[in-house]
Length: 384
Ligand SMILES: [Cu+2]
Image 1 (cartoon, rainbow, N blue to C red):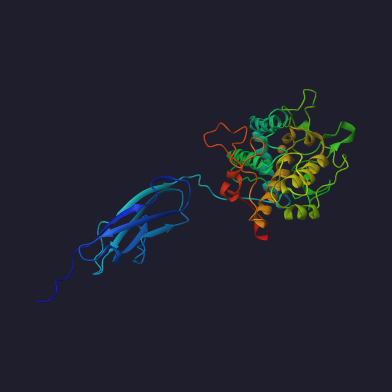
Image 2: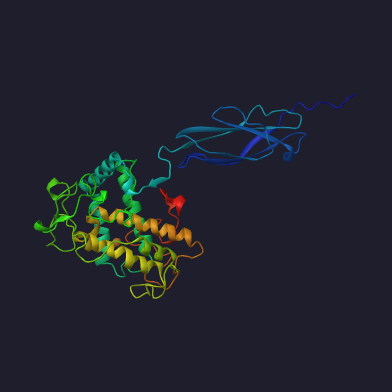
């Protein structure tokens, strides 16, 4: 009499993985099985998605799925024992991928935008202006600078983190109007003249007119369009029209030499963590003073004010500063954000940042450190 042949199939169960709705297009499932003869360690597993082809059986007890489309999915897995009996009732798990998955969005150099991309950006900006959401952001920046003490956004370590959050929220608002839009950056070291394409009549518009109180008279943000009236201002006597005074302050736009100096400057910031920090011992202070401030002054007009986001180029300028911070982080990977304590309120690494501090999961400098985790990248990161 020979040994009785094992004809009993194993059982399979899923031990981990998503259920319900997920906000990403990848998922990992774990599973196990049991059998009358084969030990669990010797079982093999085969799986499929949405009833597709079964994978080749393997002893691996997890499966990582990537590139999942939006909508409902079912993951199926079945154990196979050493006599090649296959579980005829596979374990299944249903889940669904949200239609608005967190996809990484690429921020591009404004000089490389196509005409269509420029038009889409401008029209999203104008949509936010017309429904008041643009002016809400202008007001947050203005209030931070004029009324909240210490200023949560300027003159301290959180300078980069605060503006990263401000820009991210602005970009999300733009994307609520047009999901294909991302924030472009203005590389002043490359496009540093009054005739650079950034100032084109189809994009930011040009310099102010000296004979009209430096009023911007060209492009989509000229007062005459009726679509760009300044309502949030530093003082009640500020004119309602956008003003620019290129180069009038005597400042020059940042050079690549200055940018390179910033990129090699360590540590991130230094005591006393404010306006008095030694400019040669702080990436933050050097960049805020020698690169950020001079650009605000070179553009002039509304860019000199606390309500400087009234000029839409504010966000393109700060987008390049955000890129510079990310580049500095990459090149100085062992240099931490500073400080963890002892800095002005709102500027320590785990301090909630005004005006978002009362939200249930308020942004802090620490939560701003990884820009890619916030859902965006820069178009030239490969060359950093
Ligand atoms: Cu600012």
